Every structure is written in C-alpha cells, then in structure tokens.
Length: 465
Image (cartoon, rainbow, N blue to C red; front, side):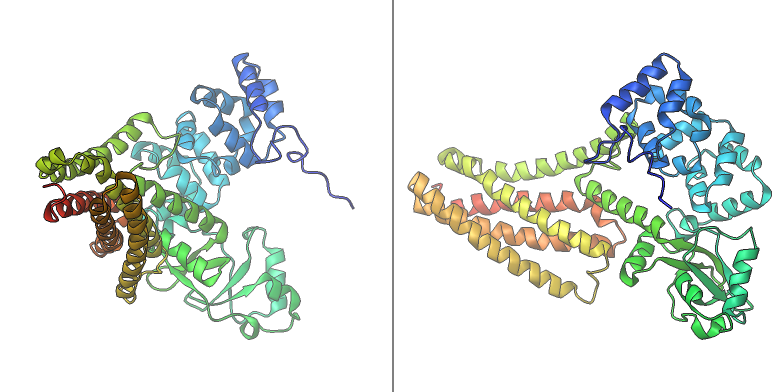
C-alpha cells in the first residue's frame, strides 16, 4: 500500500529550502482577513501542519491574530497552541473565553496544559480551572504547586506503570485492553507495591520477548530517576549525559508521579541556550514578540550599568590627560588595547559560561581551567603583542611606542583571560546566574586595565615625557 503524500510537503505554502511559510502565502491570508472572508482563510490554513499554523500565527501582524483565530475555529487546537511562542499564545488566550481555554487544556498533555495556564492571572487561572473536569483540574493544580521551571511543571502524568510480577504476555494484554492508557510512550515503568519505580521495559523488548517470560527477568533495573523539584536545566543535562528517551519523575518519598520525554527536553535545551546567549548581551529574553515596553526596560537597565562602567574606564583615561596631551598618538592607539582585551575576555567568558551550564566546569577542575585559560591568554597576548608592536614601529617609526603597546597587549590579554573565568565562577559560587551579569564586569576589567596598562607604561618608560 502506497502512503498518502504529505499535504504540506507537496503544497505551495512552504519554501522548500528553509521550510518556512512563503511571503506570498502570508499575503493571501492577510488579504482574506482584510476582506473578512473567513471561508477562504479556513481553506488556506487547513492543509497546514499544526506547527506551520503556529508559525503563521506568529508571522502575521498582531492585529490579524484574533481574526485568524476566529476564522480557523477547530484548526486552532491544542497541538497548535503547544507550538506557539509564549507571548503570542498569551495574546490568543486573552481573546478566548475561560470555557474555550479549558476545552483546549483538556485536550493537551499535562505539561502543555500547565504551560498554557501558568502564565494567566490568578483570576483567569481560577476561571479556567473551574471549567475543567475534576480529574484534569486536579492534575494541573498539582503541577502548578511545584516551582517554576522544575520537573514537576515539565512532566507528563500519562505514564504506563505495572507491577513486576506480570509476564510479558500479561503486559501486552493489559496494554491492548485498557483504552484509558496513554497513547504515546516509549517504555513501561515497573513499580513495587508502594508505587516506586524499580525498573523499565522498552517497547522493543516487550515485542521481542516470549509471552511467558516474567517482567522481572527482562526489565532494566538501572534507571535515571528525576526528583520532582529538579530544575529543568539539570533535567536536560541528565538526558544529554545518559542519552535518555524518557525518565521517571519521583516525589519526595520515591513514588512515581510522572515522566519526562525527550521531546520536552529538546525545547528546554533550545530555550536555555538562547537564554544564556541573550543574557550575555543584556538583551533580556530577546523575543521579537515581547512587548516593546518590556524590551526597552530590560535592555535599558543593562545599558545604564554599562554606562557606569564606561565612566569608570573614562576616569582612568582622565588620570593621564597630561601624557595624552604631550603625545597624541596615545589617544589613537589606546582603544586597540582595550578593544582586543574585551574581545579576548568575551571569548573566555563564552566558553566558561557554557562549561558551567553543562557541568563541565566544577569545583574539582576550576584551578586547572584557570591555568589553561591563562596559558591561552599568554599565547594570544604574545602573538598579538608582536603583531601590533611591529606594526606600530613600522607605521610610526617609533620602537619605543611599539614596545609599550606590545607589553600592554600582553598584560590586558592576561587580565581578560583571568577575568573571563574568575568573574563567572565567582558569580556561580554566589548563586548568581553568570550569564546575566558577567559580561559587564569582564568588559569593565579589560577596559580599565587596557587603558591603565598602556598609558601607565607610556608614562613610566618616559614615552610621554
């Protein structure tokens, strides 16, 4: 039997190269919305995959989102909302009545439903939960009781758990006979009488094992258990380290309360990586759908901090006004020293923050890491120092000036390497996110030391006499 072609892959809506919706398709949708032709809008959107419908909602203008949601009615399902950007989803949910939100949440996996409801105001949360079935409401209220970005918020409660005394045949019969069980799973969790996980059975093992064999003889007893309060970033690291597809989540008493699957972890890895990169630059969430006022407030706060550090660096320059006045070339060359030091510090900082985030840098290897970065900084500083020193000598015909800027380049690169590792490590030890504030301190250190070393050496050696 030949499989039916994927309607989206064979349509004209997607660009084949980058798998994004074509601008011409977006124009068709917006034109139909402007004409209030809901039937045309529905027919245009219907062939799309839910993930592409989510992309469509994100790509069109804010003023079109509510009319689009009303036009596509049943196409705006839980699988579409689960794929939406958080800010866009909040906008759409604001347009829906509590009973409509409740209907969508009941169709979702628990973790997706929690993501939908957790950002609502308390009043709206209560209104939505009141419209839900008691069982679904209890599951979501339980999840909301856990800390944000914890395994309890992330986990799904749809798990297959069976006692270890079953045989493989009995397990297969049970899976086939109970229509209330989860429909998508990769492994079955085996639990004891207190509902604590004692092992797992992959579906491939179950299908390939004779029916009469006991689960206790084929299950894998060594498993990775996730505490319900574990931070989601640590959960992602566990999945990455042990190559997990799914993992059991346990409460304080060790009882099985849910599972986390790799599809959820992929989203976490993407979110955490993007978050760290944007925090290093002080850009906040960096989401193009974020409200402008919030974006301005986030960016401006760090720009003000940077302004303060720039004033500190400028004050160092002010100490050497006389030297600069006597030898103007100092003002021309000093930004090179500070700029190269800043670049070197940023390189080290990026490596160290990533190492901390992935648990590659711990207290057991911090000293070794410091010595490693100092050796790298020394090698880079000497190389750059020779290049800038020779170049300065040839261009300005002043070997003395070339020697001074070469020495300052070496010193500032060493400072950059040291600050690039000590600042994030220190902040991490103080329980401060190193991705948020490290860049400010590293930049200040390299600017101040770049100016101070270059201008100070010029004065000490008599270059600016």
